[in-house]
Each structure stands twice: as structure tokens, then as C-alpha cells.
Length: 183
Image (cartoon, rainbow, N blue to C red; front, side, top):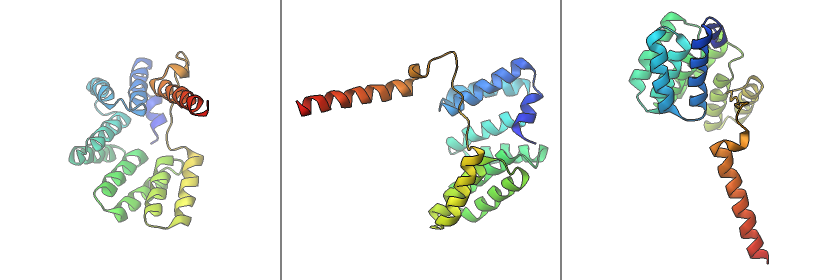
């Protein structure tokens, strides 16, 4: 089942809390996301997408055993959850088993042909193997399907985001340096 279907089954309050966890992860604020996920999972311990996000946090921490345990638990509940299959593939790849990773990514695509990250990860493996035509094929498919989603907060201007402020600072610094060099 797709993540959207799971999310649509949530009450509005839980949906907002889960979405906040997702947005924190997308912004790289994994520790805060993990705390909120723990809070969320206390109330909804079998919610597959949240378990998957928790597994992703374990992958980032290189705690592959814990991540695999969560992902296998997910696949027992929902064998067709493409994000869990893809994350198992990522663990296999991280552990040096590209063949197994490709199998898992292919399986994820088979169960959900619109799941962009599986295409992206296959494209990366093929690029690393030097098979550029296959790499391009899968990376194009990933781009069409979207390999991630990042939603800007409409209430907060984009230029107040810390990343954007840093870029603005760098541009102003570069312009200042060029000004002094050219005058």
C-alpha cells in the first residue's frame, strides 16, 4: 500500500504530527524527527510509514540491524510497501551487496511503479558500475516520478530558511570581494 493511503487513514491531529516528522527529516533535523516519531509511534505503534521513517533514521546512524528489523516488521504487515523494500536495498548496498540491492529496488518498482526513490537508487548503482545508459534510463524515470518531496512552509518566507540565508550571505560576500578586487 502507498504511504498516501496510510496517511489518509489518520485522524487530522495525527496526520499533522506525522507530516511534521516527515518535514523535519527532509530538512535534515533527524534527532528532533526521531523524538516526534517516538511520540507518534507510542500512539500508533503499527503505522507503517512512521516505522519506515524510524528505520531511515537508524540507517543514517549506521545501525543496520535495528533498521533491518523494523523494515522486516513492516514487510510482514505490508509486503508491498515500496519504501521499505527500497530502504532494505539501501542497506544491502551500504553493506557492499549491489546485486541484492538491485533486486530489492526492482521489487519495489514492481510493487509500485511510481515510487521514484527506487528508480533513483537503481540509477546510482548502474552509474557506479559504469553502465551509463541504464543509469540515465532509471534516473530519468526517477525525475519523472519524483524521488523526494520538500514542502516549503507557506507561512514562512523562503528567504528566512537558514540554508537560504547562508547562500545569500555567500553571494553578498562574493560580490564584495569581487568589488574590491576589480577596483
